Length: 113
Length: 114
Image (cartoon, rainbow over all chains, first blue to last red; front, top):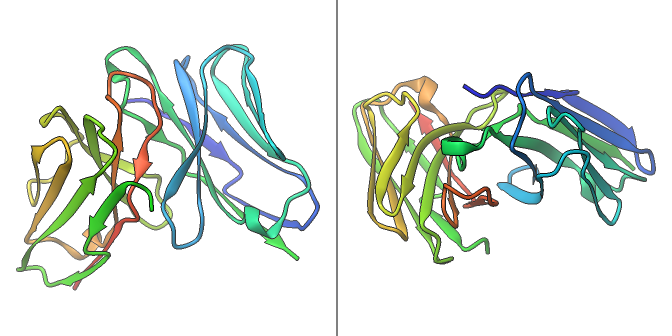
């Protein structure tokens, strides 16, 4: 089945520092989604990327889809304590696999005040 | 409030017990999912239902039995579970599984098997 590798597994930053998590696949993806899960919470959808080379921004968050549609990144500028949580990418191979999302292992972000 | 409600939020059961997890979505979606989240593991897709029909069983052991009586309700019946089945069970819904769209997750049912 679809496999996706997400790195790093853990990231500790000081408040105000930047943060990036990467998601890599060995196969071409039809789309990629990003979710955030706060400690003790449930995953919440952040964004979906569909087009090759697509870049989307949400305030301090920048999402990028690779040109070959095999990788993606989530970058947070000037982290805040409210950014704490686990960030997951989720991929779909498309076709009949639409809706069958495979989640990465997640990057656990800790922000020290 | 996510629009997807799961009960119970916490459940402790013995290996010989029978229990059920319930999920209800108020979003008018046609697809519903069960995911398992264990410590240090990625979210694992268990079952997919589309318009009440099961379209995916991701090699889940038969001690987990899903039921979807309508597009708004989803159950996970549990029977003779093992301690390694202890995990957070997340229900999710989406517009339709054939369209790439976001998943709306419930808050999860934390299951402990003794």
